View 1 (cartoon, one colour):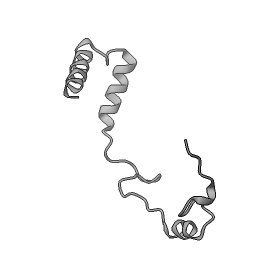
View 2: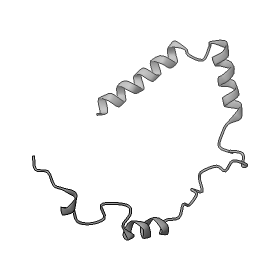
View 3: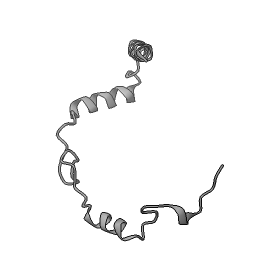
Length: 82
């Protein structure tokens, strides 16, 4: 293995160089329009569905053998595709 000391490297090797400073100051963070803001309610959540599933989980009726079998079938299909 050949070791190079830092003197032989070319290009911006540290963030103290002016080209790194210039690149960091020109970038501005933009908020994605799909990201919900803190004060805005999310409209894509189906509240009724969430409440029904929470009730089923609390009652112990959410996980059924049929649902497990369907999940396993989907998993097997996905693994067979790979």
